[in-house]
Length: 355
Image: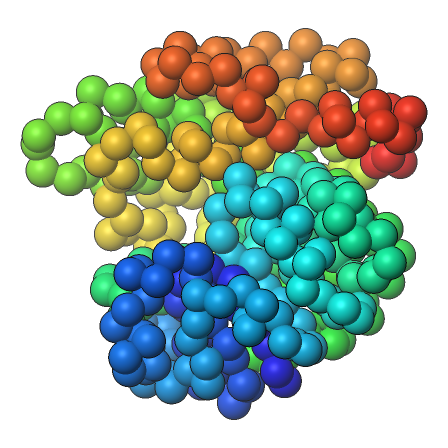
């Protein structure tokens, strides 16, 4: 297939290499030229780990118009806070229907993307979908080198309507088709995204270590103690309750991790400690990291907003948003993806959109 990968970060580099090794014609786009300079000079990604090989990328560019020249499928791997802006830019260059998959969408990313695309271009109807999580547990080593620790199993994917997700999966490129499964609803991919549960609280509750000059510490194995794991499970209970109220029950973070990584364990702490894919993942060195700057405004903020509209207290998740806002001096509720513009302009409620 002819595919375009948007973003040359950790997962973008991994996906571009993986699809190339699978035999597909890949265009890799990144906004900042200096961050892909090595690939512009020599378009080979050196991939190690569970996928090994040197992948010669068909086309590497920082020109978005060039990257969107008639791809069969587009995979967006950039942070979720860039989705709205990318949707507006896509709308200027896409002239016929194609499939755009957000990897992942975070909370209601596909809705936000569609809304901003159609503000600029109401004439083209692309298929817009989102995944529950990133497929790859990976690390970008250099501009042209990526290490893939694990491929997750049975990652959920859904379009906004969610009525033909099996066809979406059937049309994925080989190499990905057997890794994704169709969700019953976008609620399963949006509210089913556990990144916002696993990322936000641990980094904030380890601020002293994150900002210290000590050696790096393991984010999951060391940073998530039994007490922090218990706090995360309280957040997760609120997340699961939102989906239940919307009529689409989802799995807990523990259930998701056991299924995705084929693990055993009775609680979140024990499952994390037994996950070999987490064994070498070091903690961020700053709070200005995607675990905060992406997962809170595009994950927890819209989740809290919908939960409150459904009559739920959302106390624990609210505490995390408050803590992040206070520590960084940012009003994440004001700046985040709360869907108010979308909801108010259409004169409908979040419950109506998601049912």
